[in-house]
Each structure stands twice: as structure tokens, then as C-alpha cells.
Image (cartoon, rainbow, N blue to C red; front, top):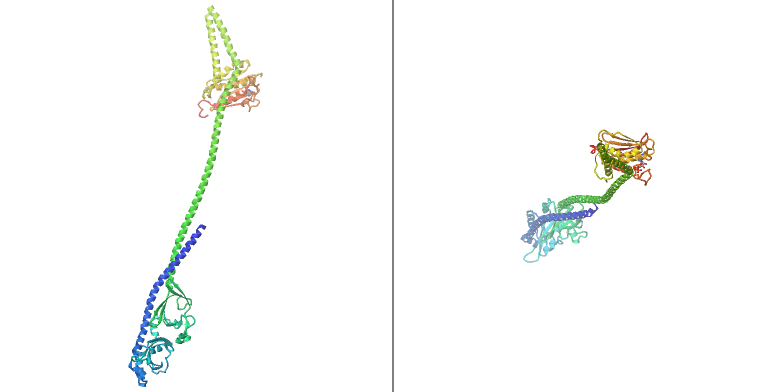
Length: 596
Ligand code: ADP
């Protein structure tokens, strides 16, 4: 808002100057019109007065040639006086003169239209002096009867010096009455600036001359009559003379003053025209212009303010947007940093998983080899026994053939073939077992897996006098998994159980399959001493057996754990309330893999 102060001040100044200019122009134009009208009025008035006085002058000139009056001055007789006075009275009556009288060469009245003359002397008057010099004398004066205009013509014969003068006294008020109705102040001043004719009584004998009134003026009108003109200030506006009256009363507060010289009567015609309407009209026009300008300015100001406010709001929004963008950019940068970290982590994790998988596979293989090591003694015995039997059966068969006992020889051969089949089965199991398995998860018969494992451990169970409790279900029990890996898990559990029951008086291995709708549970229970630290048994390299010997590596259960988990199953180990350890393997039955 502060930014607008100076433009507003400048605008106000321009408005003020504009209004002032309009006022000045309008006032000047109005005064021009007033002036033109006033001049016409003035010239009409001056003409009127001049022609009025001219009449009496001409009368005086005509009368001066009258033989009666010449005779009167030449021969001073009562008869001539009486005749002259009749003539003068008649003339005065017909012409409307106040008085017509004849002055002698010494300036004394010798005959008058008024009759009884008192021998008054007019020798000192200006008009008389001029008449006695042979010129036409005119003058205005005032006396007890009032103001009057005097026209004096010399009475003379054929170029001889004047012997007297005839004077016509004319009334001034008669001409003034015509102007009374005029609203303007109209007056005539003499060469001393004294108002002698006016359409306002109160102006009469007022002087424009401040203070020192000339002596001759005082003589002319009498000193007491002259008063200063009404107090006023004068100023000029576009070539016009303006008078301001402060006294009020019958004078307008502002008036246009016009002057016109009337040389014939030696007076100055002046007029004061009320300029108030012109001033009011100029003021009105100036005020209108100012109001229009202010309204325009106000509208402009409001628009500017709105635009500024809008601009400010836009700038604020822009700044807010910019800040937001910066923050978004910063956040994006941070996020992409975090994203990069996460990707790196994911990559590392994948690599770790990959490594773990490889390690697990290696461990599985290691576990298999370890189990194979454990079983190798039993297996070599297993293979050795049928081999020995095959040898003796084939030797016997030879002997029977020699003897011709074909039936017995045939029986021996079929025993040999049975032994060979059994050996083939054992070898096939071993081969499958030691093969590195990458096969996918398929449907496996859990029943068959248990059968195979028991078969593989048959020798050991027998040697250790373990009672095997295995109630095989009548039908196949299909679960999701890998056949060899499941075998590996079960071999592990069985050999752990056998290890645990070593040296125990009562050795029982109980294997059971339990089928629920959503899962199949395989449990292996022994009558060993139970688990020392059940929570640690699945940790890699946790073993209570002699490390380094072929017996324990502490890997069997952790590998089994990984295998069962890879089937989507679960393996747990706990102590049975009646003694011994129970291991449970939970697997997904076939047909439920989607649910699993
Ligand atoms: P290892 O057999 O090589 O020791 P395992 O991971 O198979 O490795 O077993 C780890 C440990 O769990 C064994 O050392 C043993 O202490 C314990 N354990 C496993 N099975 C049984 C069981 N049936 N009864 C008692 N303890 C067992």
C-alpha cells in the first residue's frame, strides 16, 4: 500500500491543478461573456447621457444668438429683462431644463427663467470662464437644489469678445431614473474620480481616490460630501478587472469592473457587474471535473490495488509452489537414495540366499555322505552276506547239476537270483541316496519311504535288538516332497534314535503316520534318554556325540529341517511324557498344495 502513496499524491496534485485550470478557464470565459454584455450596456448608457446633455448644449448655443438676449446685455432695461425672462422660462419649460439664465460679462445673473434673480455671481465657475473665452463651457456641479449639468454658450456679436453668456442647467436625475432598474451598478465619474451620476444613490459623491481629495474637487462639490468609495480589493483575471467587496450590503462580493471614456462630456462611464453567477458556474465546473477525476482515480486505485493484491497472491503461491517443489525434489532424492540402498540390500540378500542355497545343498550332500559313512559298515555287511550266500548257492548248484538233481539246482539258482535282486535294490537305494538332488517337489508315497528306510537300516536294527513298531497304513499315503530327500530325513531320525538308544535296556522304535484333512504327520519315537537341550537340536553343528568320529557332525537335524521346510512342512522334536524323544514331520497331503 505504501508504494501507492506517491502516485496518489501526484494524482491529487494533478487533479487540483486540473480543477484550478478548469476553474480559471471557465471563469475567464464567463467573464468574457459578461464583459461583452457590460461593454454594450456601458456604451448605451454613455450614449444616452451624452445625447441627453448634448441637447442642452445645443440649446445654449441656439439661445446665445437670440437678439433679445443680446439686447438685454447691451441695454440693461427692465423691459428687456421681463421679455428675456419670459423667453427663458418658456424655453426651460419646453426643453425640460431646470433653469436657463443669462450672465453678464462679470458673471452676474441678469435674467433667469426662475424670475426674481438675486444678482448671484457665477464668475468663478468653470463653464463661465470657458464661455467668456469664446468656447462652449460645460460643467457639472451640485448645490442646494441638487446635482446639475451646466452648458454655457458665449453671447457675442460678429467676432467681438463675448458680452455675456447664456447658461442652461439640466437635471441629472431625469436620466438616472432610466437606469435604476438595472441590476448592475452603473455610474459616471469625473476626472477626479468622483461619482457624479449613478443608478445607486449611495454611490454619489464618493471618490475612488484614496484620501487626498484635490482642493478644486472640494470646491466643486463642497468638502463634506466626498466620502471614499466602498472598501474593495482589485484583482485581474485573464485580462478582466475584478473587484471584491467585503462590506456586503448592496455590493456584490465579486464584480467585473468595466470602464468606458465619454470624452464629449468629460466623464468616465463605469459599470460593476455581479460576477458571482460566473464564479459559481466556474466553481461548479471545476468541482465537477475534480469529482470526475477523483472517481476515475478511485476506480484506478481500486483496480491497481486489486492487481497488486492478485500479484502478491500469485507471488506467494509461486513461492509456496517453489518451496513445495524443492521439498519434493529433496524428498525424491532421499527416497531414490533409500531405494538404491534397498535395491543393493535386496541384491545382497539374493546373493546371500543364493549362497545359502548352495551351502545348504552342499550340506545336504555332506549330510548324505556322512550318513553313508555311518551306514557303510552295515551296507557292506548287507552286500557281503548275499554275495557269500550266492557263492555257496552257485557252488551247491554245480554239485547238484553234476549229480543230476535238477530240481534242487533250480531251487538254488532261483535263490541266487532273489539274492541278486535284493542286492540290486540295496545298490539302487544307495545310488539314489547319494545322487545330488535338484528334482522338483512331486507327489511321494510316504508309506514306501518308511519301508525303504527301514529296509536300509534292517541290519542295524537287528544287531541292536531294537523292537520296531511300524503299523503301515493299508493304502498309499501321498504327500508333497522329494522321495530321496524325505528318505534322507527319515534315515537321519532313525539313526539318531538308534544312537540314542544305544546301551538302553529297552529299545523300541515307533514309527507312525497320522492323517488329518489338511496335513499328514509322520512321527518317530524312541525309548532313549530324550533331548538335553530341545531348543538347540536344529542348530547346525550342535551335537552331543564325539565330534570328528564318523558318528556326529551336528548337521543331520539342521539339514532335515531345511529339507522339510522346502516342502512347505515343519519338523519338531520334543521329549515324550513317558520318556524318550519324539520327532514329528508335518507334510502337505497331495491335492492340498494350493491351500498350502
Ligand atoms: P549328530 O547326529 O551328528 O550329532 P544331529 O543334528 O542329527 O547331529 O543331532 C544333533 C543332536 O541332537 C545329537 O547330537 C543329539 O544330542 C540330539 N538328538 C538327536 N536325536 C535325538 C534322539 N532321538 N534322542 C536324544 N537326542 C537326540
